[in-house]
Length: 222
Ligand SMILES: *Cc1c(COP(=O)(O)O)cnc(C)c1O
Image 1 (cartoon, protein in one colour):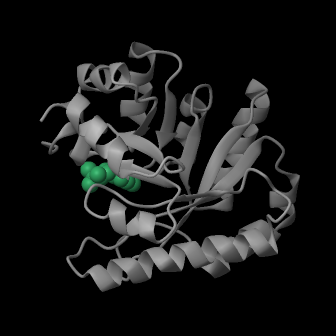
Image 2 (spheres, helix red, strand yellow; image 1 turned 90 degrees about the vertical axis):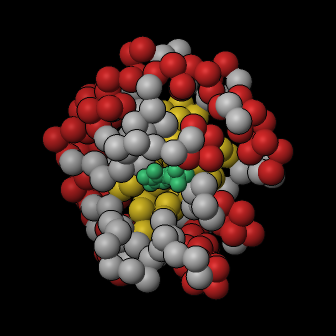
């Protein structure tokens, strides 16, 4: 099937309240344009250089999400156009995002990335890290960022129960943070979880944003 058909199929399976981020990493610009022409507006990339290269070549009304590990020295290149940084995993990074946003006179949407996989290899915060960040005086001084919710990746496994557990854990983290720190914050509403292999489970566990790559664009050749 083509990109257009894959998107139509995907949209029919995702409830209307769940946002679809088309993960276009490694894909050529003409694939992204095809998705754009099929109505897709949110695209996700995980490499700073790649998103910097692609963004000027594509329509200006695309909402770009950064979903990879971001180094603080790259923030200034993304800050002018990025729609959301989904992978905030330190206070240092948040401070730099705010600093660049202030310079540009804009506000940058962010998600806090949590380590929910039972395997040890993925990036992300745990609840103690997050409480420390949110409770810090530096955090309270940030002016030009919106914390819009949480993001996480489940273990790559065929064990359905485990994936359910991990997504359920992220939803509990979201609920806890909302209650403790963000109950009056209208921006804090997103739970970004679910990829091509596990988005249905993620939606069952309360995902509001799925990040789908290969099921739209086909397998990636690295
Ligand atoms: C690549 C990637 C995805 C999409 O993966 P697919 O399995 O191709 O859908 C989602 N989230 C992140 C963080 C990724 O790096």
